[in-house]
Amino acid sequence: MFILKNLFSIIKNNKYLIILGLGLTFLFVTLLLPYQDINTYISSQINTYTNGKVQFTAKKFLISPFMELQFMDSITSYKKIEVPIKKIAIKPLWLQSLLLNFGIEVNAHSIFEGNIQLVVKKNKSKKHPLAFNAYLQNISLEKLPLPFIKLHGKISANIKTLINPHWLYAPNIYLEVINNKKIQVFRSKIPSPFGPIQIPLIHFSKLKIKAATQKEVLNIQNLELGSSTDALYIKIAGTAALTIKKQRRKNTLSIKNYKLSVYIKAQQPPPSWKSLLALLDNYKTGNVYQFHIKGNSLNAIPELTR
Image (cartoon, rainbow, N blue to C red; front, side):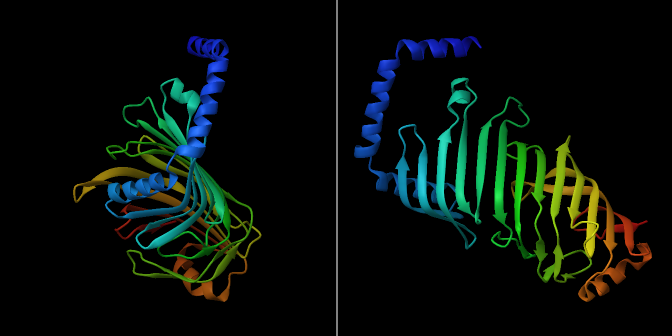
């Protein structure tokens, strides 16, 4: 509070100098900066620091008088997957930076047909020194580069994360995904310890996910596909241990000792789903399937029990 009072006092006593400084800054930024050279330099630096894994190009680059960086009509590519973005705006969190809690805000407009806001700032914890929050609005599932499954629909999500940038400790995550419109799952083939699982075409009226991690344990509070009035309704809850594993001189996040409770209500399942549901007949009561699934890792064959 004392720092804020001093800050407001300085602004009040030097308001004309501040206005003059902002005016000169505006003229310099507008007329004199070599925007194209800066754009080329930033793109090359991104490519260099990612060893060529991330390619970034933008048709137009601007700096506002308030030091907001703007990239127009940019394309970011990773592993031959191109993501066009209409506008990227990057700005410092001025108030928090003045309080020595440095951070930035990134807004990506028209990405995956929606918008994404990222807020990155320092955290006081030595274990997780970086806070990373993401807010997703109307992201098209069809545009996401998902490796094994193809979806149709749009989601909004709130993700709050405390991480260690060197991956020395498992991150703390809060995730909430909300979708109140139809989700379509196209025919897909998903690898598993049993072999490839064929996922037939199916529609769900909505999607909800709520999960959080604490003390290196992921708690899936609720994962719902569809509703109780849908032809097929799936509900999952459970826990999993998150561990950091060193592979090829890199620390990676892995899932161990997971335990899930699965509830499936099949009122009028599509004919293409009947053969898949037949594998769960031992856990069927009427039109409801209920079972528990657990395993030591995602690469091991899980155990199913009532």
